[in-house]
Image (cartoon, rainbow, N blue to C red):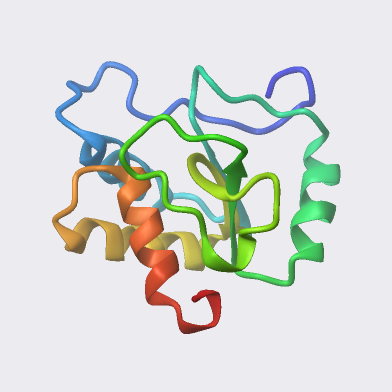
Length: 136
């Protein structure tokens, strides 16, 4: 993030980890005071940026979506459910370690996540995807 000049904030450092809701609540609370139009949520220590913020925004905008969630080629958890319409894609498993979206869409996503009662971020994201009719 530093290499490419991203404006960034490590959210949650020093907070006692309970479960993924700790992450969700921390980011949600942080976003209440952010006014940027686009937000990137990325795991702090096992994911990285590989292009400038301008390049990432340009790529994001090509999706014509409010939120874009990353995907990976393999999956090491019990939530290895490929998205049906991605069956032929090499990267077909949801990875909740990186997503980007319009600020209001990300805040609405986090409201839904907090209300869900689920404690696993990957399971939450998969559940969201399967609840959206056009992705089924």
